[in-house]
Amino acid sequence: MSQSIIELRNVFYQIMEGDKERVLLNRINYSFEEGAITTISGPSGSGKTTLLYALSGLIDNVEGDIVVSGENVNALSRKDKDKYRLNNIGMVFQNLNLFSFMNVKENILVPLYLQNKKVTKELEKQLDDYLMLLNLGHIQDKAIPTLSGGEQQRVAILRALICNPKVVLCDEPTASLDHANAEVFMQTLTEIKKATGTSFIIATHDDYVYRYGEHRLRMIDGSVVES
Figure 1: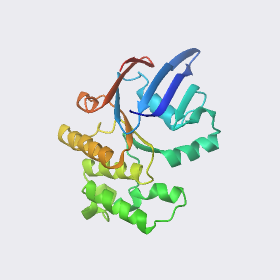
Figure 2: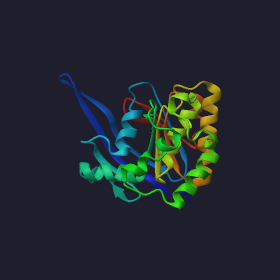
Figure 3: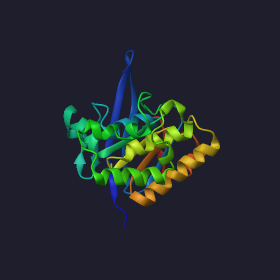
Figure 4: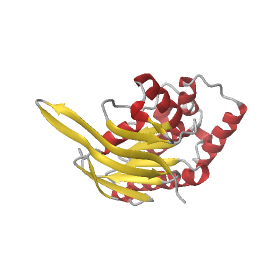
């Protein structure tokens, strides 16, 4: 029987635009399955990215419950939200946020540095396994600007995975890729999911990427209208 990794209960979020209120997340109730790829589509402004930010604890004043493995993220302080995100959530966003002054391996290890973790023999072995899985071992010492777009995407995935997060959130991860590289990206995610049991939640405009989801949501005006 499938288990949920994230439970959304009556999740609501609005902002002020001028003198008007705008609802970005409109009373969402949903359970994300553990170890699955869930894709979310919808037009620009539908709330996809806002939902990912809420799941990661990056925005405050979100109403309702966001329960990750039994812990209510909304009940945490700002400091504890940051700690929760660092320990539980991997993130791959459209602009990737890779450091051009670091090589591939150094970029991947950034989350470990942030957690003041030592690179143990076990972590070195895990990193080597991931580098082999994503065909990056031969370029691990190369600078980021010398890589192709597809290679940079794979580096971003590895960085999100290196601390063994419960969930990896991806916001339009294939937006800068052509169809062939988008296909490689999604096949890679599928392989990683099978190998590690990691849960992936992906917001996308790309129908091809959307169809990869084992579970699929559509959002309009902050509401989940189809699943």
